[in-house]
Length: 150
Image (tube, rainbow, N blue to C red):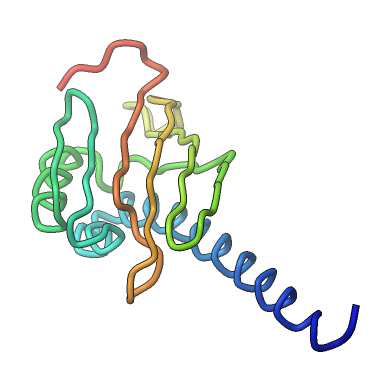
């Protein structure tokens, strides 16, 4: 392969790696913003017409509605829990991607000891925007506990 032929291949490989890294950071930021109660930062991770579907907790479209939903959903947990994000599976397709990401919520029990309160996954559709990769649709699934109360 000539150097001239290698340059486009290397550019495509580099872009793929950069895309994957940016998407991975999106997952990390999602948990960090939730844990800190930074709902502006949290809502900024979604496309302008992005959707958040959280089963019995509700659904919202657009950053303002997402911020309002998460304000209700996290009011009692800010500073008392944190998210562990794991096992991301990302499939890139140009300016769109799909993913499945596992999450675990660890909270303090009444004595201050850490305890796992929920385990689940997010099933995502992501899109490249002028501001970078954003969630187009994020659907939350709770695996443990098997029954979630709103």
